[in-house]
Image: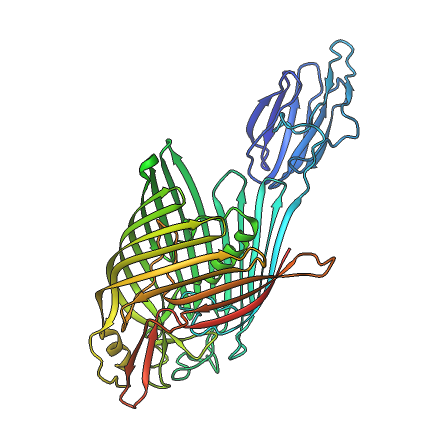
Length: 553
């Protein structure tokens, strides 16, 4: 007791000082990873010095120091947090050589940073590991760079607990485009701590694009375009302000390398005021990409794997304008109200958003639009077209009714600005075609109505979900990612089926077949004739058919 302990950095400068307590213990917490030295001194004893002590993330450096009148010693042991005692015996006696003082120290628990933790409790480095491997095939018509990364055929997600306190998830989507054989890959890593925040994620993608729509316009591009590479770093955090206010916030930094480099920051925040039996009032703000961090994270491990794969598929919306890559940015202000009444839930939402460099999936005759104005899609013969900028306001009201534990029904109605044609005359080709096409769209007020259901069959375990959203014919209702009710738009008729498949004895995991249809009735398509007798088709949500097999373990 009473020994002075000095902590020195790699330059031998004292950065912290501690005094040992009545048990002869001391500790330095929250040190940055680096190399340190420790010097211990006490009257009537020889000083003890230990250099080159490496402090690493997730690893504790434990020092056993024996002060003596002739020769003092320091024993260094590295131990992961939560590991049991490093010595074979429960305690060790240390007798000092000085008979005058002759203190006796008893080592009870080497984890000095967690003295309340019981002895002998051991935590494995990796535990509670869950995973999923999914192989799929089908259409990816236009579901590429306009916002959704196409499903290349193979994807997987793995989640594990690190030292029992941290949660680490890795998801990937990789393969080849079915139409042109171009390789593509995406990886996403998410890290979180139990009961703590923020949640950190890093996402990287690489896609090779085919050369279409007027041939190469980049010197030295040859038969293809440069590779499209994106990297996104994001964090999500939450702060409870008193007992009724909660702030969810975060940001993502997107870096895009294609022809030139683009970097953009996308902050978002949502303030929730709980009013007890009166419901909850919410205000949200976002600028840049879709605020996926505000969507509530599922509690079940398998559902979290599906959410990570869905987040990986949501690429930044990129387009070309005058041969320069542009990224779609949306500034959104939203006010929402939510009230639960037993098994019923009511959502009311109003928003105002401003969009720059909005993207649409486009099918156009070869040579009509120059290659400097349309970005080829990776998995189809479609392209991504920059329709320009627009502003709009909107509102929605929805009602959800739970029918037991297995079935849920909901209905919604709303209105807002939609893109409509102001001129349906034939579109001419040439250098002015892209500018002419942009000038023909304007924002007009439109309405929509939707119904949705989800159910699980009791005997087979089949999970079925379906939805239908009606919009005004001849208009394009742009997607609005709601920050207050956590829903994503699904125009047209959509179905999803997940069917568990019995497995043979001893198979490590379970099998699951999936089938998905999006926009079955091809709703929300706008067609414009051309002077050559062909047509240009634009849409927000292309029709797609997919199916696959998943292994969950």
